[in-house]
Length: 304
Image (cartoon, rainbow, N blue to C red; front, top):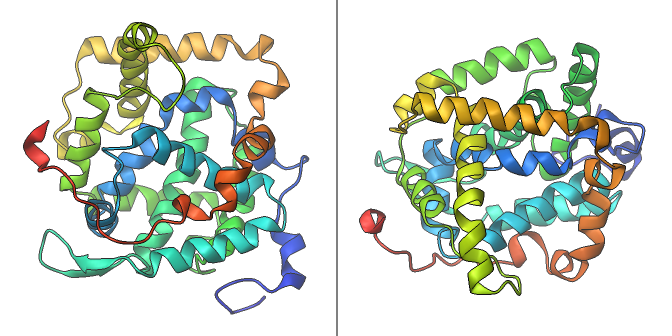
């Protein structure tokens, strides 16, 4: 096993996934768009990740573009073949620029190994939990295979071999510990929730009257899918109110989504390759649209 940060070319074939893998089959199901708020909140509730988003992200001004760039990243990692290795190195190089001071006064760097691995970990849990609620629940064997596959893909972005547990059971223990001990209500959590409460129109040629009709249902679905997956203690720590009506809506949305399973066409179950074709030019610009790494001018956190 190589001990270098990135795997050598000779190791890529063991790491990259193909159509026969659980990862290929399960990570771009269109129904998982309903849970995209979940990993984002888990990420920005980490003090280091939250500080980096506060200082260097303009998510609250361009949420749709940032969302598409996140989907681009996952699509390249899973469906991009050897291009995933180049993209991963560029992504890590971009994050090397992100440093500053956390809200607790501690200095941070985006490449702190535990924080960097946590972002990868949140996506692993999102796919498993998201399918359990909104898609086709994975069997225990599928979960273990998926975990091994996606954990290895972390090597392509510079997640070190020992930064995540080797087994699914070990990962569950690690994940629960992170939820209980590391996550806090950061300024970035407030910004994300602020943005979801007033989702701007997407960067698409939709007439304003159409967006006004869609915005409330879309916002509600994003809220239910993302907040509903959070463990109740995490919701309380992040200051997120959750009512019985919310819980009922979350469960109803899940039932409706799972009921689609028998009629879901393959192109909707596996959207990643189409995403790569559609976003080819934007992906070619590099991770996060080749961001300059300069802190954006953000509005104050109480503007919501």
